[in-house]
Length: 329
Image: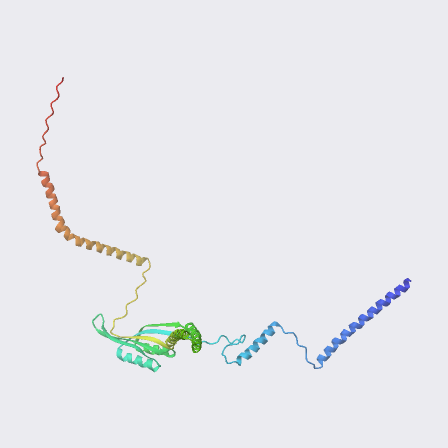
């Protein structure tokens, strides 16, 4: 019996080993078929893309799409940067030039501004005298110059003589203009809506109220447009104030030194002490004539009165009689 059982167990193990061998052989044949089909010229299997490769592919596709668009905005990932915005900048400048002939140089400055496309906003000329009573001429001209030619005209006007001072201020109003444009667009939509409602009004009360509302919205729209146009005008035409003075005019006042430090404090203290002494001496000088003219006579009268009081005779004092003593009983 033991021999039979042993033979059965060996048969089972043998069958199991044969089945496993056949299964492994089938898997190997499938892999070899796939490899042979690939090497035979068939389409290769697509490898899974890495996250970096997917992002690069998307960026490339976005760049290709953005390059063909007409919006002028950079597509995300294309590396084109932010769109270029036309800045609205208001330039305001002033320059002082010392010249020999004020009228001739003023006319030349006006011609320079007009040649650049500008115009004269104001022109004031006068004659004054210096410290030596020598007359000299001066002119103050306000020029409106296009922004593109502002610095060119400024340089040419400064070369008309000897430049004494120059100051330029720039104010960026781009955000204000953009905000006004947005509000104007919204206000126009409200005006159109009010007009449509006005056309559909059926009663007199509705007609009057809608007309008032439409008039109010139109007034607000006109106010916003006026502000926007004013800012754009100031940005498009810069303002330059030119002051021309004759060379015989007195020089500009020197700048005051810094009033800080120990030596400056000591000097200010000494000056204040001298000022106080001068005030005291002034008061004494004012009171001295009064002291001489009034004080001396009053002093003499006081001394004379005391002397007369001392010379006045003393009044004798009489003793009262003693009362009689009462008699003893």
